[in-house]
Length: 446
Image (cartoon, rainbow, N blue to C red; front, top):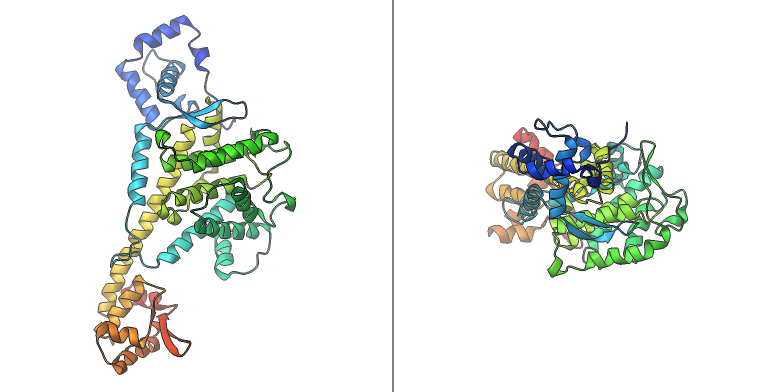
């Protein structure tokens, strides 16, 4: 069974004069317009549209011709071309506009701000998301290890035992690297550095890490079928120059929504396949980097590759639908936005769970026996600021108490296992104990 069925050519459908006249005469029919609207709402490819029930007297080919004509009328030309010099095109239908708006609303949220309702363990959440992305992206590229073992590798910091674990560690470290380099200007050197970091000690030919390919014996396969033959390697230098120029140039006259542009970059790099291996990981990392560079900072919280990993066939088909339907990028844009919105929904669910838990823990803390109001106030603050340090002086100044009372409060919290006492220089500091949240959860029954 083929991975996809390519659509019929518009010229072939319209070659018959009777078919052309029928389409022109009945194209505005209400029942046909309803079919077209629904097909464009989800941007169905021919592969799926051929199974949609059609009004009596209309063939799927005739319906497809009307859909194609409508899409072409709305197309914009992208800033890059395929290996034969033909441009890619795209359209942003209403349903895609809605998804973009939802992503913007989510990305403009304030759940990470430093307020009483802020997300507790913010940095741990970022780390968790970066780990999930690193693991899922590597598993997509063939890393053969379980998610549980991969997380153990990253949490403990031990040396990788095999190539799969090395892939995951590389991806994890590269995600942190692009987070730090979000304000860098994209250059070919920056792209190759990302690839070098991604693929170090994981390739059959180690010398290929961080190097554009120098031969054409590279094809992309899926389920034993060749699904993509990338451009000739001799064109890569020029294509990567154009890639960098497109990335860095935010032309106000031809402005593209950053989430759409990030998806285009994802597609473009994977299409060009500039490296011998590791192109998918590099493309996804560059998409993240671009969004962070355009101040979509909450994308630190998203593990987009986790969505892709659940149905890798859909990921492959998004590329194939674009390549087989006259370079229509809209298919890939729809897929990418679906992955992003799914990741947003999952992040939002996690945030709501954590905020609900914080409310529950705060309530449990109020009922916790043997703690005074000052101690409860400090622990509430510690829940929201897990990396904060406390001293006898800071606690004394915060509550207007004498030194001895402050000392008694903190030592008592340390003795009860809520805080951990450490010596730093000449003074003692107190930090959240490793089991503090677990202690509170057990008291709250969560």
